[in-house]
Image 1: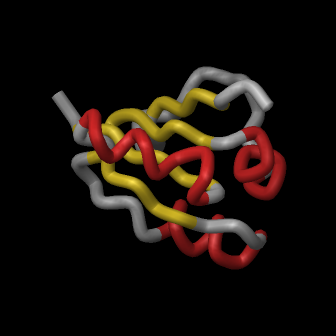
Image 2: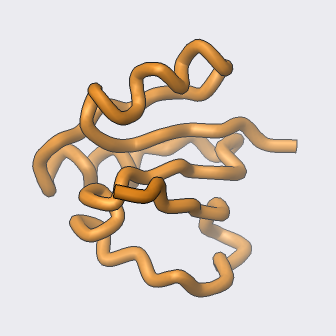
Length: 75
């Protein structure tokens, strides 16, 4: 079982740290892409804000074995 990470604006993701989620605060496109690229291999699920998902252009498709499962928070 992998860990859970969240990427996005601090007001949207910081509270998830209370549930044990690894929070990666990123608000601009470069920071979001950097956070995505530096995810540890143990991450099995990534929670993205809608804005972060748009910046990554994540499609709602099945993940490949090399990518963690992603879920997008409602905006």
